[in-house]
Length: 428
Image (cartoon, rainbow, N blue to C red; front, side, top):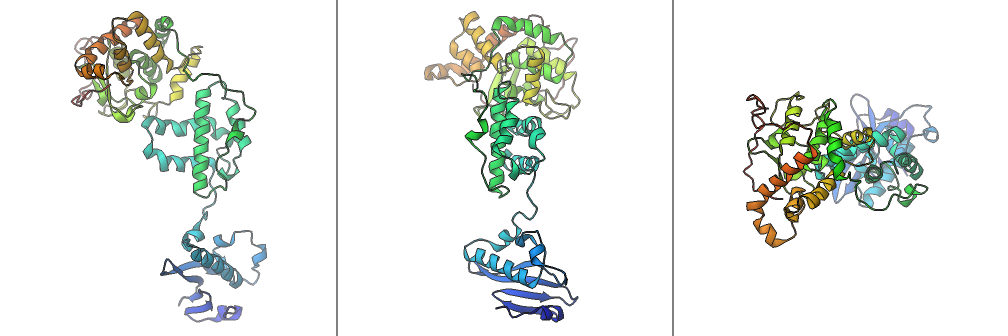
């Protein structure tokens, strides 16, 4: 039974006045009044502020539609109830202050939860995943439910959003589904929603994806025609990035995140640090004349002269999104994928360059070399053999692309900043 009365609360003098069970009324010399809970947490005494005293004669706890733990002004009965809840939390081993402040800011929107998830987890992701995580959600998920509270997103919302891209761009649809689930599970860990991301129910009613997980690859015989058509159009960072991807047989993420500091023009090498690589192992690509020509054209579009500037930046000086290159493919009315050009190169190498060992072609794609004996000779022979292979690929695929002499024409240089210290040990 509490010791304080409504009249005592109004007339109490400055000081601390106990009500019992750890609840105290604090009165400051200024006359302001507030509630405080004194409780033991892990054997230590803690003072937890509960809120200001509500002396309004019209206040009624029954008509206030705000959770008790979130109220900032409390009547005597509400203060006792809040005190009891937090005291039980402390007895259960919980931190009463954390329980008091939980969800005080309210439940965020899906967009806000996605940004919080990205900020918290991006340190463990590759650069290309960091860049594509929010951009893919912004393009596909935000229009459907970006401004909805994250605790209101249900399976049918995700299914309806995915329906538009499930068969058209299945690879992106799978990524978006995974990323939406990641955001919802992150929201569950923050107590913004009571349930984790829905599972199988998300795809109920959606068409079955096509069998096989390979990327649609353009037959290598069609690559020169595609390159010629693309080269005839005006230069943009996206088109140049796609051409560079083709001539180097690289992954698009490696190209989109390439920086001028990675390029060594004198040695005609593109040294890619481990953080850009799928296998997290640094890799060096030899640059054929066609790739050098693309670099020269990219240099003419530069807006930043810094050593670490992106080779193919977006309008915001950030890495291009993966959809930028995919859109160029769709605009060309082709059913093939950007990643499929790696298969085009591999098929061409197998059929047109039989004198080059298979392990060399695999190394050119930054695949691991399985044979230990071959791997032992890699460091002395593979670079030049890969150069021979990629030079031939450049001549085949880019027969209409003018070659770029080493001095880049009339002694012109791209930039003294484009010099990379290639002293690190070269690995496939």
